[in-house]
Image (tube, rainbow, N blue to C red; front, side, top):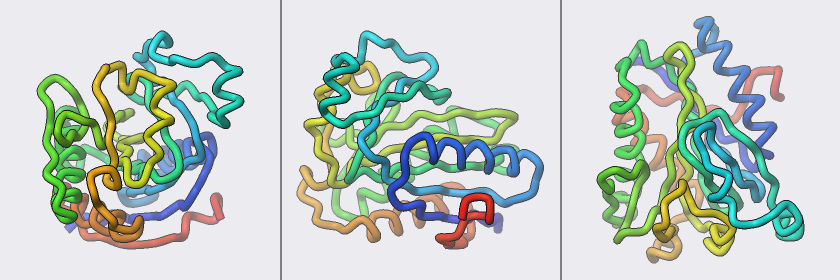
Length: 222
């Protein structure tokens, strides 16, 4: 089976995580490393995707500053989203030439990973036609936005675990006027480590990987 390294980056600023992604993407393109799944928690940050609409940001710079929220433009797909404490963000760095050269199939597989994960904690999640992401009872529990360069992926998904949902008041999430939810709001008491382990299992299942767990990055990032 193909191998994937699963790496827990802990809490890391969005810019720092982006720099790690970019370097690992280049290494993956050169065949210097195997596929990767990075998992991280960001401090409060709002990101706007490359096709995003700034009007979906509902607060000005001063309001964001007072709330302690950073703002970043991003080269991922999708519109605007929020990341913060209590959220599990996954950044797969995969060479899709070794799986399927199909962007839509890749996004659907990421959704399935999250749905399989939530099922382990007795949460029945689903897709909503025309809306990327994962939903429970009409509320979005996970957002997805990806970037693909020469078939190597970056960016990925954000699962609301114990997220303070009040921070979504500053945006129209993904440009869609639908409510958001979290695992905690849905009644789950699962801890972060258990959810990350379930995500790794779901990732291996849906992408046919053997998991290789590691908390160590290359010396470049140590």
